[in-house]
Length: 105
Image 1: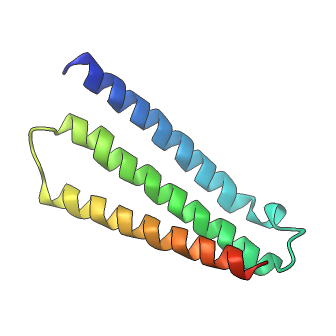
Image 2: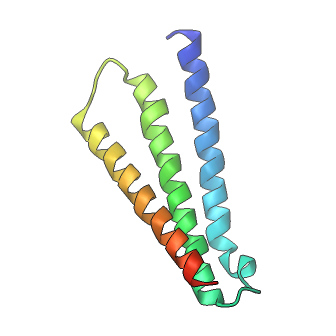
């Protein structure tokens, strides 16, 4: 494996881990983050939807850059389906977070 692929894989792994930690933190702290919002219950759902989106982006990074680098010579249909699913979940959760955030104003 050439050095640039190793660096990309390690960097993507660290970024994915950081994003997952951020997502879990946001999910757990949603109540404290939205305590002073006009509609805290809606804002809490917006924060949690954003956390789901961040977690899905983290999984997409792992699937694309880490697993894709390890198995670059084989393109698996299952890996493609997982990438598409993670992308859809991320998109839906982000749109939901934005919509809830606007509704909570």
